[in-house]
Length: 77
Image (cartoon, rainbow, N blue to C red; front, side):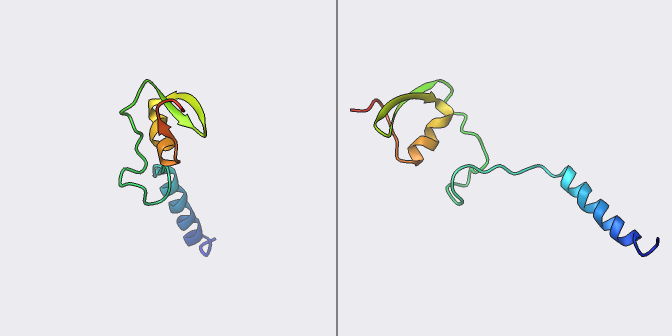
């Protein structure tokens, strides 16, 4: 029993640390910006963008992701 005690203590510590830590959330590609993991709260209404040749209205929080992938603001021409 005593030989298993250090393993049980180590396992208990690992589980405890994992349960107490907060998950990290990243958006976009690694190194995109120092603001990784934070929601873009500037936009809250709908914004018109041109997405792959189609005019869409998206939530203001989704605009940055669309612009980072080549879409542009405004209606398609």
